[in-house]
Length: 433
Image (cartoon, one colour):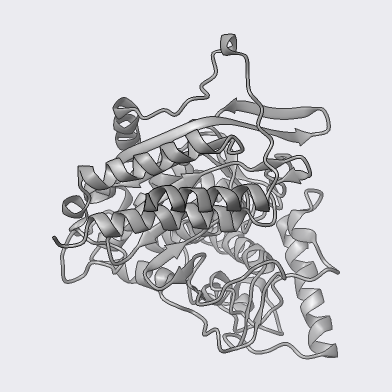
């Protein structure tokens, strides 16, 4: 009875907050509309997720309890039972059966050692890309989807990967890599945590989604704007303000390009770096990359590192798993702790988009933190999260499309509500009896 009430409450949120477009296909089309709960699919996800630790982390040791990151909890295999899986499945089935407005949702849950133990999906994705083009296909774990702000976690993971390879330092500054005279002490870590003191966004400059320029030109414009703001109203020093927005990660991208081009003595741009050090070694989908506009799939020399990633669920989950594995490393576990720890205090001045409500949240490196939950959600319904207390992680994949355009203002609340319900089920089912 209680579960039914909760489901009805959630569905009322869905229907009230965003008008979903349901597009049914003829049965003869062969597309999958019903839910898919397949052991075989989960086994494929496990095989895809497995990493070669020694290849990715040479000369390192793993699984030492004394050095394990707070992100990792090796009890995970013992706390998730068939009961909790059945309860999650019943909840997801309830969404499918009760609400005709949900056009797609997929879900992957981690189990022992962080590998998938459960997967679920239903529906199709259907959204316009350009004027006379659209994407229409079953929502599968291989379907490429724009993940909006969930890109930030993958950008952080990419930077950490480069740090472990000795190609980059989180302490590198804008002065060292970009030659800035003002704001020269801002570090890569300040930028990833969005506490650089620079504006995160401004209506006068929207270059982070401009596909007609290189990322270096965009960063030059951001620097010029920051100088103008400093002259007129003053810009706080680094770490004195949290100002959320895409500017910080564009600067990160240019700093990474400069650092690696110098180190490797050849010109490199962000997507080349991502391909060489992340996509190819981890065997991700060849079409996975960053764009200025990931919906239209345009602009690869000025990719939006905050919002522009196009990726599928199995690859995104694999990168979450990579972060957990990095947390098991005796040499690099401290990097993962820096990702999930708070880099700002919400008693300080915060600049957020007007439609974002972040009470009781802190921000790490590319992730939000609310007590034990670390997440990196995107506005189209994508929602990855880690539960630091229970030691599991999970990924919701959705592509919200409304008649008024891509996504809707309240889609964050929708995916948050679904993830919260699933987390509550797992927490309840795994309490000591």
